[in-house]
Length: 79
Image (cartoon, rainbow, N blue to C red; front, side, top):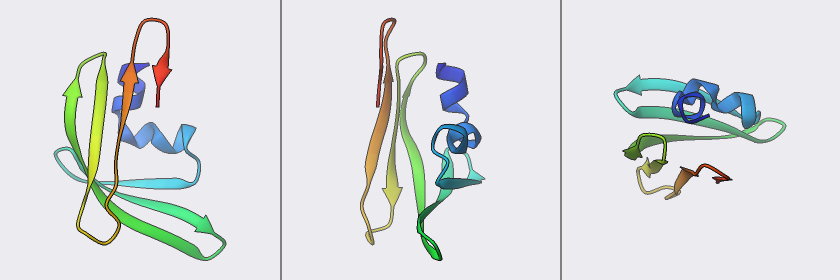
């Protein structure tokens, strides 16, 4: 599961309201469809990675600060 989630191009497969555009090493532009005709674009950076345990990111820019992570364990996946 970790490898699938680490590939951000798979994110739209489990978060169908987003599109991902790679911008460079560990940087991406995320477009979130909020409502018909309304989209939010934001650049993110994968800021922490512990293989098979955690992937964390935060937004670049001050318009709408955001950070999040996926954490993995043998029994559960925490989002």
